[in-house]
Image (cartoon, rainbow, N blue to C red; front, side, top):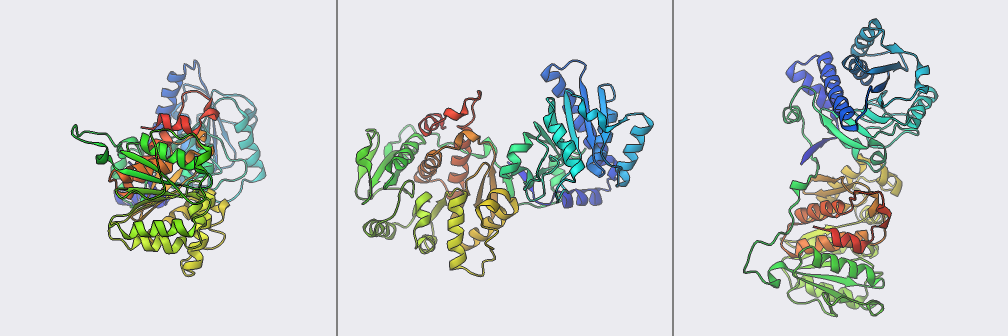
Length: 495
């Protein structure tokens, strides 16, 4: 698991202060690391006599670019300055390059290069591009060469939102530590492959000067439900029950995914408004009109439509008969008027394990209910708008913290291009999913996978992290035909 920092500038300042590292040394270390990556990339791609274009801005990001130029002086190099340096260290690096006759004119932006390096703006960018700068970045984006961003793509703001015309990188070489800005939905389009580089200090030492509650999930952080007990039986691995409502196909997908992700038993609960009769159900799945007594997790909401009074009573009776409710709440359940009351009721159980799996529009509806129930919670209409929830990292982190305080037994999975999991006051980011998941039914598969892990005894945190990671991993394909990934194909790939 890698740490992600909301205030990387503050962390870098603290590292310099505590270790007595001068600005020029950190800049030099950044250049050395970038040069090493580019040299390795040139070899991997088989580029002979490589040409490199480095475009520098006036701040320290530009200074990194000037320093990089010295370390790539043996390449066919074009070094362009779009503005005179304004920081002392950037000016020092600029003057060295000028004496070495490495500075070239903007006209060279019309020439193609094998590798294009963006050193215009760093993480401190907050506004919109000036017209002249926007034109430069647009020219860079049109080039055919491999595009590399220094620290962050120019035009990416600290909160993860993007300026119009942002640099589109194939690789983002981020310095010192990972930044939350790199993991917004929009940033995912422009960052390419994110590669952390150290600044002459081991990452663990660098990060020890700051604190964060945000983490990037890697494969060894997720634990598959591997079976190791030769004497086990089907009851050893839990019983997942999925409510099947007016769009019961979603429930069928969720129940099938649960069975494929280790649940010993998987049952479709036929609600009052169910249309299960329209479907050819696999004999692997059971169908019931009552919640089985030995059920160990419920999945409620996938294709549900609405929850009738009879179904609500059925649900309440089951909850009242258990000491350890484990439930996944998804999709249509967020439309239920008494949803906040239901969530509070569940959080009243000492050993409750609750996972919410809303996509952004469902999260918006949920938060509107939270606003109404808790008017002093500190969330504005603008903050919880679908657009802002899609774009702003800082808002997602804030919301995660608020929801974990209001509903402490609840893990909230904010599904999007990058999924954010808020649990126990921390945020876990799943960034390995692809656009292949942008298809109806993908979320139902995730709900079923999560329910299966709860059924097998996972904590809500571990169930959410593991299900989300392997759900995302199953979307990755070696070819470009990711448009053809259906939920059924996705289920066949999980695990």
